[in-house]
Image (cartoon, one colour):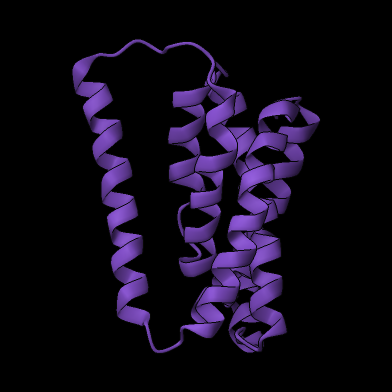
Length: 168
């Protein structure tokens, strides 16, 4: 219940900011398309798997934890090495976004931090466009993943309403 509720809440709170970034032209359409190309199937599969693996909560949490630790470690390593921002690597976006989507479907977390790291690594977008593009990526993943969880009855409507009332 927590994942589905969190995803739909995340979708709702991303709408106002997403609109602002769109209106300001701070979303890169090509990068967003590539992210969605991998992220949409990933979040759908991750959400479906979580619905089927209700008893495997510990495994899911371990996978989420490993993903976050690995991503943070790679980001820290690049930072400490002082590696310059390299060339554009748009081909990395769909497969990496698939993994992000899978993790979002499992845990409702990851699109923001992991998507930002990916965009900084694989594109030469300005920080503003990285944030705007990643925000819209997370919005779509939250809507689709939350929709799957809603379909399977894994959303607490009362909690969602209470959070949305205070959070939006």
